[in-house]
Length: 274
Image (cartoon, rainbow, N blue to C red; front, top):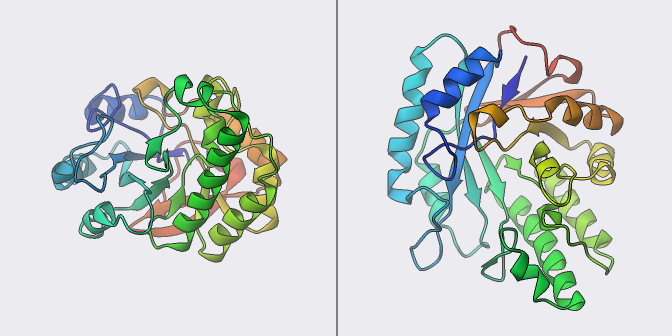
């Protein structure tokens, strides 16, 4: 069964309406199509331009749900929620009121600043300051995993996106974050969008995937598609990486429940979900 959950539409920073994404997914044989537009709410009540307006979240859910009447594929409703720390509960409160099939949790900010959208952010920092960003990032992932914030942890090791890497040893922080993910039974996504970025590799690395496998952390496969033609971007390459890491099953989602299917069937269309 072909399932794709992490995708974005014009409700946030995607290029297309959901109807266009749905039509493309139907044409290429997708069995389960999920949408997970950005929802980010800053402590002062504002939100970034790449997020939907929080007060429109219920309208977003209603529009995506309306496509369930079409029988060409199954539709799932998700949100990509930005973790800003345990004190910032605004979007958690919004999400709690919505009939979501899954929540994706993301860390895009460290110390109140977005770190993955600007080369200047990194180039103006010293080596020590960059190392501190990586350390704070992994500590945020750990804290997010310890909360009830999400079902899926998105693009872990995202700070490498623009081609910068830590020089200090952040291994213990990675281990602590993965331990928290395992303890709270969260799913890690293999996000293939990194192949398009300066880092030129998926999130996370093979080494981190192997650490996930050793902890029996479940995985899902994602393209983080922001346009219809990228909803299955490099899925074959991602599937091969998951197999190399030792995974044999892949997670699926509905109504905040998770179940598993054989990884070997992840690119085979035409099967019904449970």
